[in-house]
Length: 472
Image (cartoon, rainbow, N blue to C red):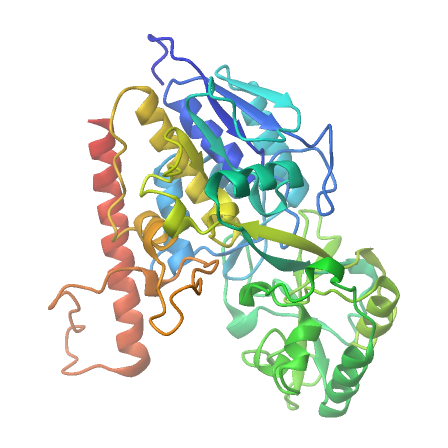
């Protein structure tokens, strides 16, 4: 950290994962930051505390496999870049099979403590209701999917483009000691062991065909929260409410969050469950479990009635029921340049989910990039973009250039929120995929895995070079 030169501060609006990471990266580069967070003055429909980087949906950062999983590669790249979010996640992990899941309260506390203790970061609790004033020559808006109406309207007026909106639904959390373990059992799918895990990190609730059909019938018949003025707003497919999935076909849930594959009922190993509901540990104490994939917009009374039809949850008590909140994001490929700067206003960047990325880690990674780009600009340097071959670059390119214009419908907006995935990475160079020794020909799953491993290895190597060049 270079503190020999005194720079004017960079302003970051929003203390979620992206804003906290952006502030950290800026401060670590030796540039002062003022982080503006409205919680503490005004709450949201989804947050429960005033802590920075509070997780409002799942507590999982998904796969931590950096050898063949795109989000695992992003984890690794963020660690290489000195990510505060990944440091806090690693120090507050809870068992979750092949995933990196965290104790949500411990995670938020770790981020809040680090940010507030940094000598170059000032946290100001206030609501910013309009675009940053012109005297804030460098600023980052990282208000996420819960952007307050005043600021959202100011953004709309500045860009001249309507922000798109969709709904995220939050999964319920169950008290562990109210789950009937004479019916349920501990097991990760395919017994996979992940960071801090044992291969038995999920609680599994088995269903017969009759029980599954009764559950789906009740689910479809139950009352849901109305959309009112937001009727017709599209969902993001990665966070569909369970009742919306059920509406798409009776077997949809069995091939989604309730799939029975890779699981054997410890109480009745010879009988294959027709469907399985999984619960994942939600806190370090192991007293809370969240219902995996069970985001919902069901009314509270309906939730307890429907979810207690699940074998093993007949007497379940809920620490938190599911909920619904509105998400907003901008048309980034049209509005932002490749360094996340608003084309109509130099010096103003956007970061996090409001840019159209989806997921905790993706949001934080865009905050990381925005922070580094802003810090470079403050120092009079040109921001160095990560190579497209890295997870950073692949996600950045999707946000700032992943827009397909329909020839049939030229006015139609096709840009949608996206998790990082190998489909966003450039193809391997010809000859880059080599066969294992002794194998004349390989195809199918073996070839697909080898391809992922090669893309992952290339990404991490190129990321290390990019970071080293940034420092030189």
